[in-house]
Image 1 (spheres, rainbow, N blue to C red):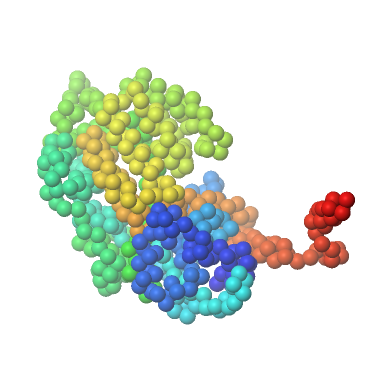
Image 2 (spheres, one colour):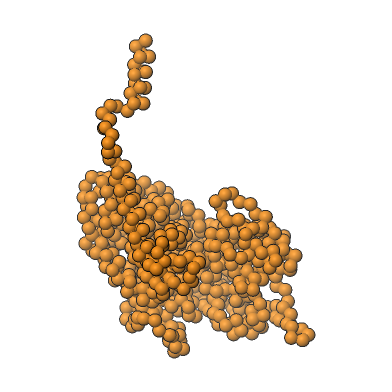
Length: 552
């Protein structure tokens, strides 16, 4: 709360805090959360809050990090960061305006008990919503009662489950489809896959009647009904929450199929939380990375990332679909796997890897992809999230030309174009319905080409991304890239490895103090120098020159 007061003490920052109402371009395009449906519906429902445009709209981001970098892999610290959406899009996610509010100490991650640590923060948010605090506005020159509300949380998918209380690791692990989630358990692959994207197609679409090209069944189901916040609250309000680490029994896992909720999230203590359309955002950064790794790993037959193999082919045989891909018993103990459309021979793999190794990009655009290419193993190793982001959106469609069949390249290119479109900084809302329909067709095309083991939960979650853009605004203000970069800064604060949390807090407070003092001292005169009582020297010399010229 003192940080908010300091921001309004600065004329520059106080002016930016009302950018969304005074400077935002209102032409129907999506550039900021204020252009989206959730912001507008909240303004209509809570007019006493929206009447003062200086009231704060916040986002909460949290994820685990290892403060020792590569020195240890078991220690997990969880910073909790607030994002300010009153600011312009170019400033919302900048390091200067990210507020570290909590630091959940390690060595273990909080898991389902994260609500215990969030309780003080939620109490402050309730106070800022109900009572507010007196703040002086340096831009308008008055004092007012500042209030704040929390719009949503930003986190990866496992943390999504911890904060929302939904079990994301069960057969109905989609927190948006919930009980209508379409999933099957593969007998040989021993994994749950999420198929059935044909149900999102129009009722008269020809794909709904195809059987052998998909999972062996026709599709007559309508799209799943998405529950409102009030409906979800009715489901979780009486859930018996059990805190502490415990080993799940088989009966507990079976019970999640009936009721996947582990707890009532502490955010429901906020009076307005159940009225939100989007309460927890799907992180496009991690979804994009997983989709990219699945595509590249399957095309290059990476043993660690490929979704194809003997178990996958046996599952095709078990489902009695795509008989031409069923494994064939060879001589001895060898089993022959017939080549699929996406199967590349060694020459094609080498051509693809050489293409990636030869890429030259502008400085700062991405990493040097030559470092990721292993020509010995013919695979890509060690790519980070941003490397996958650039590769999927810009390079992969070009790299596959002349290597894979046309229908495979067409389906992969369409999923690449979708991610490119949805990550734009300016989005035309009239095109979102078309983007959604094209995405559903693309997922159906991928179901016809790739085996069922390809379709993990991350592939399925892409079908809900357009909905969140409609309701929450552009993706770049709701993903984890800025948060991950900021956590790298927090890691650099650790100087005493025996007390990592203390080092982070001490250096963070020191930086906040220096930042505040630098802004304050910029307005004052320097000590030891006389105050200049004359006019600006440049303006004065120009005026004298013009006077002499006119006189002459």
